[in-house]
Structure formats: structure tokens, C-alpha cells
Image 1 (cartoon, helix red, strand yellow):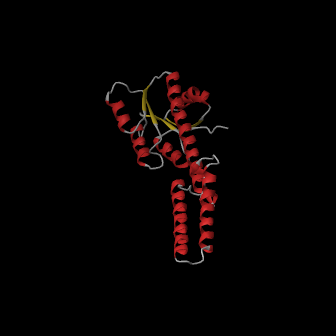
Image 2 (spheres, rainbow, N blue to C red):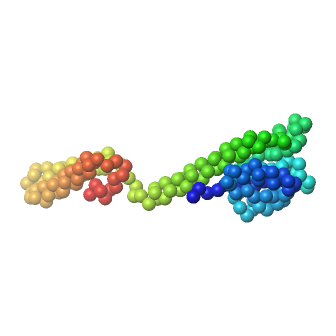
Image 3 (cartoon, rainbow, N blue to C red):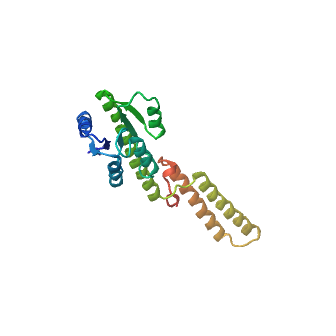
Length: 216
């Protein structure tokens, strides 16, 4: 089951909150009411929210002051805010809304379809963000649980160098007239080890998936 986004609706007038619930109810998300800026801040202390719908004109702490408090908190600063206001005569209101960290600014009376569409966009972004976070956590666990991959070319160079050393030791034994039996056995072991590494490389699985144990 898909996790529902929690949307905080902040307005001092109950009829406005009821209207928002009627408009957004069809989105099937969790709608939370707050009747003041102080109520909104308390709600944000208890739960995580995908979006805040914030009325500008409220007694006491208005929408801009509330937004400033929200953006000052590390836990809530990234929650998008849509400002809702009936004041559209002051050209500075929209600027103040964006300056306060608002993601959008809608004046009343607003088109219900437009509001619902905008809220849906933010909900979709929240869902996508949660999905990416889950995938990132999964990949991080996979990387932590996986043995580091071997540098194939580096591994082959190391094993070839061991073969060269064994051949050099064999040549020394022969030149000096000593018993070459042990040196020959060493060369055979080194060649076998190199052949095992080459065999694994030719089996077909992705190189990055091999570990040092698989090379013998």
C-alpha cells in the first residue's frame, strides 16, 4: 500500500479549513488541521508533512511569521509551503510569500481544480522523494554487505609478476647447478593460479562481481 502524504492546512477560520478538506479529499491523502500559526508549529513538532497550506491573514502570528519559524527549523525547512490569502491588492504580498520561503502563492477565491492540481504535484514530488530515499538506503546496504570487487587487470598483473619471480628463481637454480625441483613446483603453482584467474574472467559474469576469493 502506498504511503499517504500528510498535508497541514493552517487557517484561523473553520469554514476555510472545511472548504479545503472538501477540495482535497479526493486526493486520498492525510489532511491535518491547524487553526493558528502556533498550532501549526506544534503539529510540525509531532509529525512529518509533505506540504503546508498556509493562510497569510491570521490573528497573532500571521502566515509570513509562521513560515519564517518553519524555515528556521532544520527538521521542517524543506517542507514546501503554499500561501493562501484573500489579499490581492498589495503587490508586495506575493513577494513576501516567496521571500518567506513559499513554494507557491494563491489568492482567494481560488479555483478548486487549480489548487487540487498544485497540491497533487507536490504530493507526487514527495512520493518520488520517498521512493528515491528508499532505493538509496537499499543500495547503501547492498554496498556495505558486498565484498569489494577486485581490479581484474591489477590482479592479473600481480599473478603474472609472481610467475616471473618463480621463473627467475628456476633460472637461478639451473644456472647454479642446484636442485630445480622446488623451483619447478613453484612455477607450476604460480601458473595454475594465473590460469584460474583467467578461467574465472572467461566465464561470463560481470567482472565487478568477482571477488579475490573467486580468483583463488
